Length: 493
Image (tube, rainbow, N blue to C red):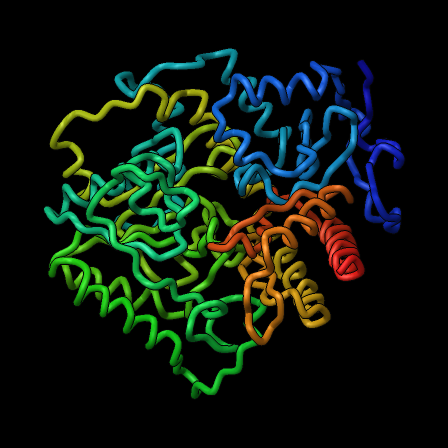
């Protein structure tokens, strides 16, 4: 057992393949913040257990040829069992919003643990009601009614049910490339083949063309609400967007050919997460919402990855599109890693859900609500949303310089700290960089001390969705590492 002061982790423990300027490793933390690295079972034994006792799908989703054996975290950093430190730019799949083991959230959690761990919403307990009031105060009218869940999949599952009960209609439209959950019901919403099983999933779900202005058939250099635009040419006149008109035309064709005249809902992530931080033309949601409502449907904003200030300019991703959804689903960053999700909707839609009983054992537990309430306080007190805007914009504009430098970086996009980097064989064809090549770069970045994610229909996008407390100094470190990883790959090939 060894004890390390976080502010004094020896350089030699940082597991770097290549020398990077030492300034990128300096972190400023209180000397009182000490952590203990405990030697657990040998790595070989852990992998043996993983193969024998964990469902085989666990091995399928395990990142890296040499997996990361995570042991401890603090804010934007993770340490493995050997004491090697990594800058975490994926946050447990965009989930750790205000930092690993954030002291404020940790303190609030510990305090609640002393009082009441669990009861359900069959009883009236203060933390549930205080949190619901605090959460809805951050949403515009009439989005003022909350139902708390355990996850984003469950939240989207219930949103489907609420939409169908309220409208009396059945069919639901989502984008190709979308990911809305892994339950048998939400698998129908999800349009990404690796996450779909050859079994009956929710029927009545239709996928329409994703208005992707980089990889789709239409797009130009002024289409999206992002500090960085695509490299595609654009001849649109001021205030017009040909790409938007074409993609809306595809949605109209979906209405004309694939669904009944009356539908239940349209689900859309303000920025696609699993799809690789895909963004749409600026006015797409405005026109899509209007078309959906004309056909009796409600509009659902899946904020599981874009909510809680991550996009920087707004607290909710849908606000950047200047639309007002009928239902908002959320999870991941809502609890900084603690399992909690939510469906927020209008009183009218919520009333339809009361036609029968619905019970959730853990949704809205005292502990979950205390954690989530502390997350909201921390976002406000620490200026987290502004940090997303400042640091995220800096990261994207600097990454755009690498895009202009390297032929295999096709696109950089996003808002705030919801960022995608699309890799291609060349910019002219925009063909996806093959999985083996993506894997080489991905492993190299990890070996030099940075954790990022993967996404895209073809696995061609790197995803950067870090704890929202990262700094410009962290960005400089990542840029140095990513640049070196690209150089290493090009030198090998």
